[in-house]
Image (cartoon, rainbow, N blue to C red; front, side, top):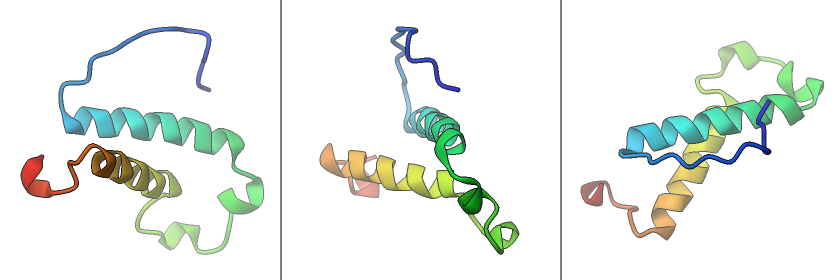
Length: 75
């Protein structure tokens, strides 16, 4: 699980690495707090994307929009 006591600063140089870091953090937290009835719901094996992936896309998209980078041409 995520350790909040350790302080470290890491520079992320590109968008792909940023998205990967955000996904790993979200995925760790999501699996730690999600109730069993959500984790093991019906038809989960037919899902195209995981819940963590969808949450990551939503959060990163919102952050990029807030920074004024909501156009693919700007990235």
